Amino acid sequence: MSDLRTAEVEDLLHVLVGVTSEDDAYALLEDLFTIREIRETSQRLAVARMLDAGKPYVAIEQATGASATTIARVSKALNYGAGGYRKALDILAAP
Image (cartoon, rainbow, N blue to C red; front, side):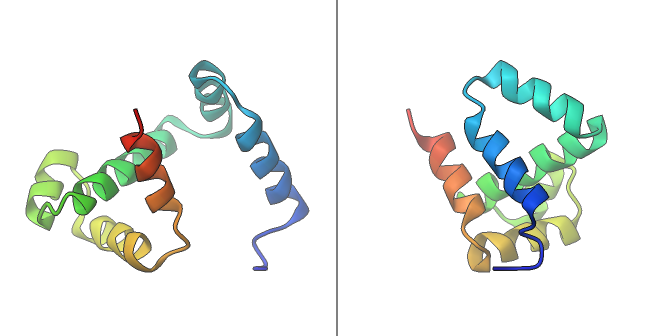
């Protein structure tokens, strides 16, 4: 277990898993994060989706406005991370 997984993080995980509606999730995002943080996080998910579809960095940069550094970080996490992006993409692909 990493040093990041504190009691506070466990509480956050419990809350995230317990949110059952998109409206409740949106309200939580609005309260927890700044508008910029929400946009940046959403952008990373869009980048992951495009990387998974095989899009080149230049196309992703143009479509999302993400920097090459952000795209590279998302790519690394998508390919070698803990599997969070993969799970998110699976959720988005589900009917």
